[in-house]
Image (cartoon, rainbow, N blue to C red; front, side, top):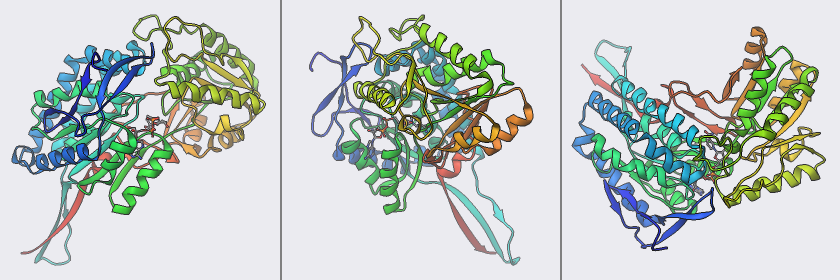
Length: 482
Ligand code: NAD
C-alpha cells in the first residue's frame, strides 16, 4: 500500500488527511493492478467539507463577487482544463479504461461546459412582478441555494462532474463532490485548478470514498441544500428518499435501456455504424448506450450482418493505444455482471450472434468482447435491465407503431435513436418516444447548451442548458410598500 501514490481529500483548498487516516486501493482496469490509494472518506470528512463549503458560501470573496466576475472564474477554469487536457485525459483512461482517443475528444469539449455557464453567470436574475396596487412593488430575487452535494459514477467522472459543477458555481453556490470509489483520480487531478482559476478556498471540495460511508452522509447532511446525483436507478431511489425526508431538492440522472431503431429507408451504412457506436463505445458503459437495437424486418438481415461483421473486427486492447477500439470494463464486478447477463440471455432463450466471451489478452484486465444477441423478445430480462456493458439485443419490428411500442416498453426513458431518411417519420418518432433525448441519424451527440433529462426511471430534473439554473437557485418574493 505504501508504494502507491496516495490521494487525500481536497477540502478548503488543502489536501486533507482522512479523519480516520484510512485509504483504499483503486485498480487500473486494463491490468487489474493497484494504481493508487484514495482517502477513505467518512461522515467526519463530509462534515469538514460541508463546513468548508458553508464558510466559503458566506465568504465575501465569493458571496460579494459580481456575477460577471464569477463567470470570469469559470472561464479561467475552462482555460486551465484546456491546458491540462492531456494529463487529465490520461489520468481518467488509466482509472476507468476509457479509450485515450475518446478522452482526448471529451477533454477538447470540456472547457465549453465552463465557458457556456460563464456566459450565463451574469444573466441569472429575478424579475419585477406586475402589482395589484401602485403602492406595492413586488419583485423576485433568484438566489443560490447554498451548499450543493454532487455525487458521480465511474463511467465518466470529469464530464459528469463538469455538468454539475459549472451551473452550480455560475449560480453562486459552493460544492462538495463525492466521486465514485472506483474513479477518484481525474477529479483529484482537476482539484488544484480551482485555486489556480481564482476560486476562494472551500468553493469546491472533494471527498473520496464509498457510497455508504461518504456518499450517504453527504446526502443526509443538514448543511447540504441540494443534491445532484448521477448513477444507478437503485441508488438514485435511495437518495431521493433521503432528500424527500429533508425537503431537499435533488436532481437525478439515472440508468437507461435505450432503443436504437433502424427503418428501411435509412442510410444502412450509417445506421449500422450508429448502432455499433451506440452500444460499443466506452465498452457499453454509457447511460445512453443503445442496448436495444430494433430493426425493420425488411433490412433486419442486412443490418445484423453489418453489425456482427464489424463487431467481430473491433480491436480490443490497451486503451492508451491509438489503434485500440474497445478497452476494458472499468471494474471487476462489472465484468462479472456482464457475464452473468450473457448467461441469463442464453438461459432465457436468446442466441449469441457474436462475442459473449472474455477475449484473450496479455493485459490481465477486465475485457469483454462486443456481444450481439438475437432471438430475444422484449419481455426478457436482458431486454429490460441495464447491463452497462458491450451487449446489444437486435430485434425485428414490422411497422412504425410496433417500433414505438417496443421502444417505449421499458421502465427507463433516457435516450432513443432513430435512423431514417423520412423527415416526417423522424419528427413523428421524436414526439412519440418516451425518452429525454432523441437522436435522428446520429447517436450520443451532446452539448452543454442542450438539456438532458431522464424520463420514467431514468431520472428526475434536468441537467445542462439554461433550465438547470432553476435547479441551482431559489426564488424569493419581495414586497415593498412604496
Ligand atoms: P452507483 O449508483 O453504484 O454509484 C454512483 C455514485 O453513488 C458513486 O459515487 C457511489 O459511491 C455513490 N453511492 C452509492 N450508494 C450511495 C448512497 N447510499 N448514498 C449516496 N451515494 C451513494 O452507480 P455506478 O455503478 O457508479 O454508475 C453506473 C450507473 O450510472 C449506471 O446505471 C448508469 O446508467 C448511470 N449513469 C447515468 C447517467 C445519466 O446521465 N443518466 C450518466 C452516467 C451514468
